[in-house]
Length: 147
Image (cartoon, rainbow, N blue to C red; front, side, top):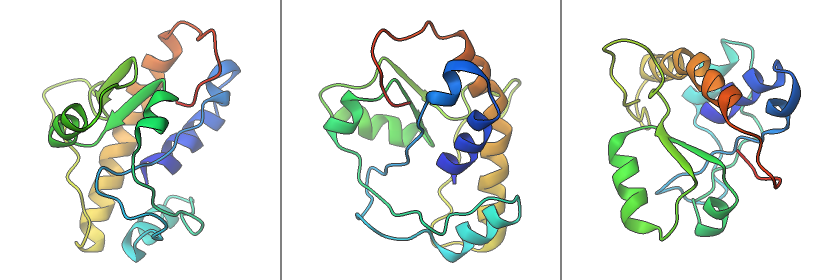
């Protein structure tokens, strides 16, 4: 869901942000799995589709091509730091840039009901304005890397 929401937001931007390519990877993802029915329903409710989504595990090769990594939870960040030799230059929680005293973690709704998926979606949507502000302030990269 985060990938599609961020792609949608970046498509509305001008300049170099439109060239960023968000991709979704999981620290425990089994490759090739479709999105859950509740994830499909939660995104359809905001006009986006996950019909063609397939899961992929995070690899060092993907990390080496990544400019910014946004994790869902602090536990994910700890797992990333312990499993991989090199992380991208910018690593944050997705909700790191949400102002105020709010939860920074986005709980994984996997295996839960539609309500939990909608809450997850809404927590991601709330994070996107801050992510866009951060990305606008990044200096241009000399090479072409995925975001």
